[in-house]
Amino acid sequence: MTKVVTRFAPSPTGFLHIGGVRTALFNWLYARHGGGTFLLRIEDTDRKRSTPEAIDAILDGLSWLGLHWDGEPVFQYDRRERHAEVARALLDAGHAYYCYCTPEELSEMRERAKAEGRPVRYDGTWRDRPASEAPDGINPVIRFRAPTEGVTVVEDMVQGSVATDNSVLDDLIMLRADGTPTYTLSVVVDDHDMGVTHVIRGDDHLNNAARQTQLFHALGWNLPAYAHIPLIHGADGAKLSKRHGALGVEAYREMGILPEALLNYLCRLGWSHGDDEVFTLDQAIDWFDISDVNRGAARFDLDRLSHLNGLYLSASDDGALADRVIPAIEREIGAQLPEHVRQRIRAGIPAAKTRAKTLGDLADSLLFYARPRPLAPNTKAVKLLAGPALGHLAELCAALGDVAEWNEQGLEDAVRTFAAHKQLKLGAIAQPLRAALTGSNVSPGIFEVAAILGREETLGRIADATGPIATVPASPS
Image 1 (spheres, rainbow, N blue to C red):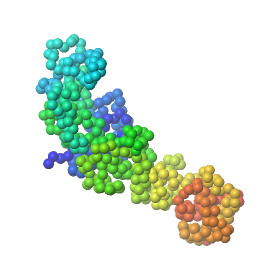
Image 2 (cartoon, rainbow, N blue to C red):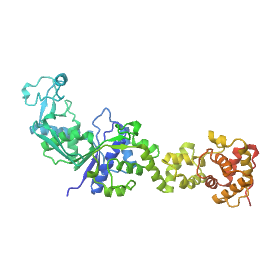
Image 3 (cartoon, rainbow, N blue to C red):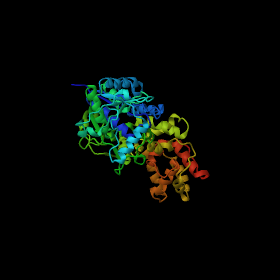
Image 4 (tube, rainbow, N blue to C red):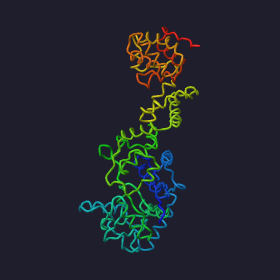
């Protein structure tokens, strides 16, 4: 049985977008499922648009996602002499020919076809003309001598049998007048030389498959299996754009999406395993088969991704989340946090993670643990700290001095007793207390917050909020 070899072949002309990530994922899964090899090829032949920054973004994005490739990346531009060598071999074998058409002649050819209502294609002017008729001063291109009769059939693992009438495929340029190879030739040569057995890519490349199949046949090389997966659309069914979430993978990283959640979500875009929605990457490897990919376009929904990410956050190890969140909080604060403040954040993660959809949400919900005193309350918190609330808080500050066991239950009992004594509802005390301790009107359970902050910090924050009317009691001996 032939060992599976897949490849991901992005062009480094921009960010690694979400559709490219899914293509890489499907290639990676298919290779890993079959115990095969996953290769990375950077198709950097467009020298004007290819950038080192885009290459770095591709490599960094795949590494962050854990889609590690086998061996070293192949850079297509470095192989241009090999591509040209194959074009000349096809020329020698009679499967290609020199074309001396000038740009002006090609333009006239296009205009004639449009005027006559014919498809715009090269008309084969130099297909059978002898070199003796070649004009002076024209550097020729090398064109493939494509079959003109019959059909070219691509047996696609997703799309099924796709037949293309050869009469609609013209003689493509393989080598430009300056000696540089074209995309279609380069892809065929690289796929052969890299031993690729399965080409899994977007169905926008389906038209290329017929031409590439013809080249494989002309070269006498084994044809890879093709699988053209549908493109991703937005939640509204329209072509995916930035407004739908068609962002670079680094944008999802910055917004706090976990790599494992993103991969889980992308797995479900066009592929499924029963009704399973949440699964590990190991399970995906075990279950994945390219033949299970749907033919219809998948729909990307950022809200669904955020929901799934929230599930992953809730199930994540607290220590691992702390390692991710603490640096983000330090960047926001603009300083390295002392260890006792880091401990507060670690202690607050179990409750906060169940409410967060992203790492950004989680960091924001824990930020108050790290903010220096005095806190700057938000607008709603300021309203909670107005009127009689300040007097109640000042009295509560004194009452909390009598709490012997500074823990969540002990604090709740003390606040409830205080509220009952003042003939107030619990919320009339708890809400101003939340505003004083967090600077916000929303937070995790306020008794948990006070327990995590500790006696000194809690009483200090209440004193900050109530000003000169507060008296911070001494700790009980």
